[in-house]
Image (cartoon, rainbow, N blue to C red; front, top):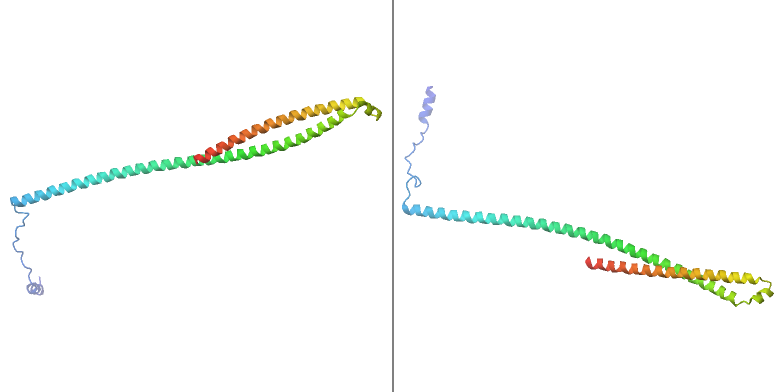
Length: 193
């Protein structure tokens, strides 16, 4: 090295040499009292670790139970929602059925009324024909056989109209029964929902 470098080294302060270190307590054998203290701390730490493990296991079990309960609740909600939709569909169907039956019942009632009016007119004409005396009809220039034929014709119409009215009354009774059954079903659905 050059002279300038030596001078710089000489001028620089020298780092102190390391002093002898004191032995640490961990390096020395512990006294029996210190060993007991450390063993006590160790036991305490083991107990604390055991408590923490049990708490962790309990919280894991609780979390698992909560997840299972949540899954069961979701399944029950899904099932209830499905059933509610089904009930809503059934209710709509029953209400449509009731409306249809009421409409048919009104139609049958109107048809029955028309048939009764026609029957009344036919019976009135039949009655008037039976009141006419065949001799008076002959004197008026009418054929008495025509009167008999007309009376028979009106009798036939009366019997046919009467039979038709009976059928209509029976049909109307059936429709009323179906309507009542539909109402009962709608009431049951209302009670369920």
